[in-house]
Image 1 (cartoon, rainbow, N blue to C red):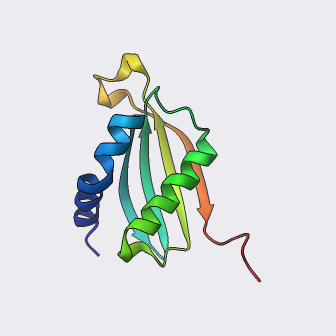
Image 2 (cartoon, rainbow, N blue to C red):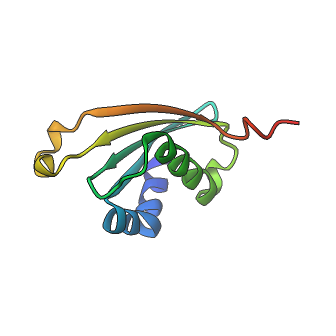
Length: 108
C-alpha cells in the first residue's frame, strides 16, 4: 500500500475543503495491522472537541479510501495550531492522542 499516493489523492479531493473552510489539515502517517495512524493539525477556526474530531476524521479516511475500508481502528494525533504559531511549523506539538475502534458499539 502506497501511503504517499493515498495522501496525494486525499489532498486533491478533500484536504483543500477542510483546510480552507475549517482550518483542519490531515495526513495518513501509517496503516499497520488494520489501524490507521492519522496526524491532524487544527487551527482556531475548528471548535469541535478532540474526541469528536478524532471520530469524524477517522471515519472520513476509512470511508473515502477503498484501501482503508477494512480498518478496525485508528490512532489520531491532534496538534493545535494557535494563531501566533502559524508561521513556525516547528512549534507545533501534539496536544491530544485519541484511539478509535470502528464498530465497537455495533457488535451483535
